[in-house]
Every structure is written in C-alpha cells, then in structure tokens.
Length: 155
Image 1 (tube, rainbow, N blue to C red):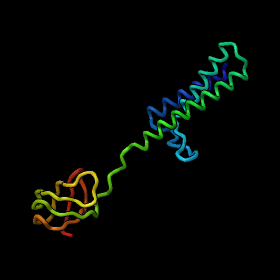
Image 2 (image 1 turned 90 degrees about the vertical axis):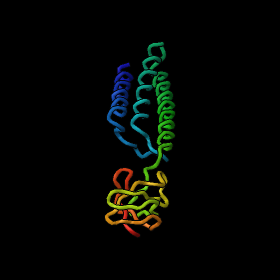
Image 3 (image 1 turned 180 degrees about the horizontal axis):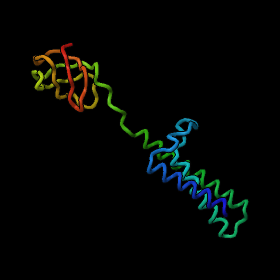
Image 4 (image 1 turned 180 degrees about the vertical axis):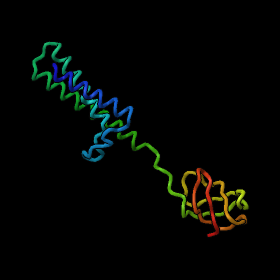
C-alpha cells in the first residue's frame, strides 16, 4: 500500500506544480501531440488512489496493480485528450504588423490618424501616427506597433 500512497502523493505534487507554476515538462515528446505534466500527475494520483482502494477491499497485490495501472492509463489519456483539445482551440498569436501595408483612411500626422491594414486578421482599422503628414487614400507601410496603434510611413 505504501507504493500506491507514495506514487499518488508524487502525482498530486506534480499536478499542483503544473497548475500553479505552469506546465512543468511543457510537453514530453510522445506520439502526435505530447504528454503534459498535468495528465501525468492525474494518472499518478488515480494510480495511487485506485491501488489503495483495491487493497483496502481485500484484493491481492497483483489485482491492485492491474486495476491501478488500467485506471491510471485511462485517466491520463482522458486528461491528455481534453488538454490537447483545449490547446488546439486557442487563438493563434496575431501576425506581426511591422512591414504590413495599408491605406490611410484619415489624414495621418504626428498627432494621429487612421489606417486600414491589408491582410491583418484582428483589426482592420487602426489608429496610426506618422513623422510626416500623410493624406487620406495614400498607401502606407507599418514601421512599428505600439499596442493597437501603428507607426506608419508612405509606402
């Protein structure tokens, strides 16, 4: 029973570290997607708990290990499937704006203005500023981004 308790406790520590600090192993290369520290922790906790429960109910040591391994594999696999699905549903980072082209939709100058960028997925119109005065309808290129504002120049 001691082995099950120790492995369950180690799994709980790994699971708590993964939840508080972030993924401890990030992902261990395994198959298509990898195996996360959270799913390893869940598997170890389930291994320990199911082994203790099996031994407490009078099953032999061989049965306890078999049950514990089976439940741990199922729990870790289910947790990894959920983690993988959630990770794939995250939005990709926005594309870099430096070098993007667009058209001034309002006069742009050092005080500000507005530009419509081409090929940018998140925001089509952005607040912009320029070192020189750029009239509406002029083609521009993004030099830098600061938050949602962009620094532009004539293209």
